[in-house]
Length: 308
Image (cartoon, rainbow, N blue to C red; front, top):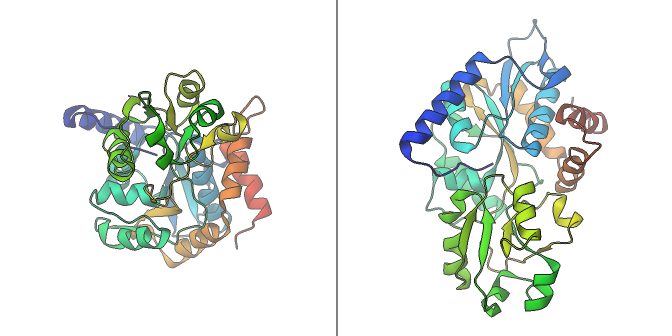
């Protein structure tokens, strides 16, 4: 969900390589990778970031479009935000599920919006010409600071404000860009007076980040709120009384040229149905020994929430 902070040269090389790969590869997503609708003038290429929840959302939005006569192709696991937004810009993809708070901060690093409504309103002016976000869902998957239960009990920490009581050095496990994110290392200091160092872990709160927290390599970890590992490992998600972390509602980001009335209507209906509880349940299905693939997880959700 996040764009890694690399040198401009390295980022350009990686992005160019990723886009070349996009143009050369065939559609992904298994049995649901393409839906033929030759009688329709609507066609959409849907992409995803390189993590499971984004792929599930890609499939939900894509399969809903396909079921309503739109020709759909998929480009899963493109990479992080800087790469997939370039793909949207050059037409390699037309649509991608996004997270409103991080998207706003990508385009407006000075934004101080934190509520769902304020963040969404900010996107209306921050997005470059040719892009638009459709209706945002009530479903959210936000960053959150997590500690082990043992750490919470030792220091009596249940909120970010409580971290001031901790007398040992604090290290946060998170993606590299957490070093400069407004709600990352700088935000801890400015909002809560807490000094911490970053241990860069580039898996967006995934297994490596979880393992680092469990093993004591870090004292805090940035893990998204819909990640089953929080509950599975009895982690304590610290409260954020000063609203440091911006709202992260799910919303489709689309190339305006592809945002026909029909496409917008279908996508908005999907977003209206999505809930945070749905995300947690679907992420759980997509993990573990009995892992269900994103296309099948999406198909099941759409059977329970038919979009017409």
